[in-house]
Image (cartoon, rainbow, N blue to C red; front, top):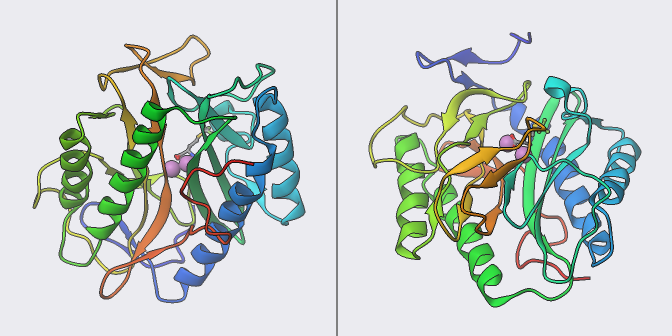
Length: 270
Ligand code: MF3
Ligand code: CO
Ligand code: CO
């Protein structure tokens, strides 16, 4: 366990130092660049195992380490969650069909710092409902990020996301949340994507965490399949997710995982 960085709040949230932002930005950039470069490999007929194989190669080529290979027994460099899969989809031989939407989630370790980001892709032609879902999910993440500044609370982030999503008549998944990260993959706090303004721990400069809302076209309930990883919507409705790693600055937020190519959104088609 690394104790060399910063201090802990009473809620057990680590406060990192000024210099630590650069390490996070470097790790975040590696992860984001891989997500940029993978876009051309997403098309109908492609298998998610092949996408993951290419990601594994890119992680190595960047001189980084995959945070997910070996994590609680997980064996892949990415999670690939197609259509009604909410998160933690396991790459496999099944091939993408025209109109499938998918989230690709990559976490790398660079110099001991964790960079965790995910975004949406489409194989072939994007359908109208899927397009709306993806837009709302992306915008909900950005609204959550806009609520990040010292003095606001984690409840403000959740409230910004939930109120926006529900006004669009979509639902926020409750069963999975964002998380603190830094020198470790998952740390306090749980970053809920729903909640009430003004509740929860107060945001302080030097906190590092992810925001990663999962939004469903139907009901919010999920279930985990027998493989113990794949989470799906109970009602089989489409689900989308976007994730950034962020840090609280003196007057707002630094996004550690912006897309170098500017293709975080709109959903890129090869
Ligand atoms: N990257 C995921 C997250 O956003 C975690 C994946 S853990 C795995 O927290 F083991 F499923 F890869
Ligand atoms: Co995450
Ligand atoms: Co992730």
